[in-house]
Length: 277
Picture (tube, rainbow, N blue to C red):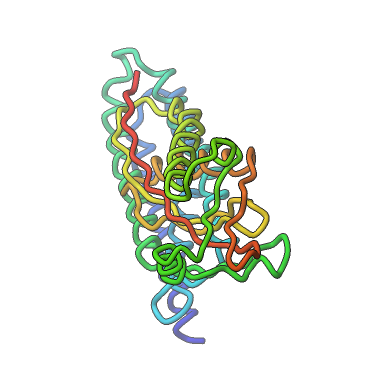
């Protein structure tokens, strides 16, 4: 109990010191309108920092052990928190572009860059500690998923019929070609859905990541985790939102083992390059 109380004290104390630094920074801003909007930004900043810091704390033996549903809920909230945070920043970027604000913006933009790095540090720290297990909310029996290594062995011996989509199934392809067709269909459509969220960024970027999910025994896509991060929170959130959008829009033909529908893991590499404005 003493350890928990001590950790909580350190946590609260760190944000107390952070608030004192905020007050000192606000005092440096000379333009009153910009000062008001910057103070609004600081409120969102503290909320987003609190979220990402607390979610980076281990919960079991130095790791973060949660279900895939809890991990998905984390990313849903991360999207919401980060959008509010970015909105407060964009207001300053877009409304205070005149040279008369230049001196004030030097202080503010320096703060933006520093906080972006802190948020990313918390996110990557959590990513490294994360361990998930599948717990599907729809039906308990869907939680029985063939492990990745078993899927690989079954595929080699042709005992497992891989999942597919009607688009590929209707082509009358061989098992090998249908598997390739499905992989291409999956990559192309996930990429199209990610494109919807790329437009929200003003920067150029090279995305390289990988998502692990489950194709359950009814053909639904169920998010598990990132197995490889872009290294930048904003880009991982774009990929997550694109994946969830695609997962909500289509159903697949599930995998079969011994003529029975089974749920299996699937790992999808995502590589995209896009340019800003």
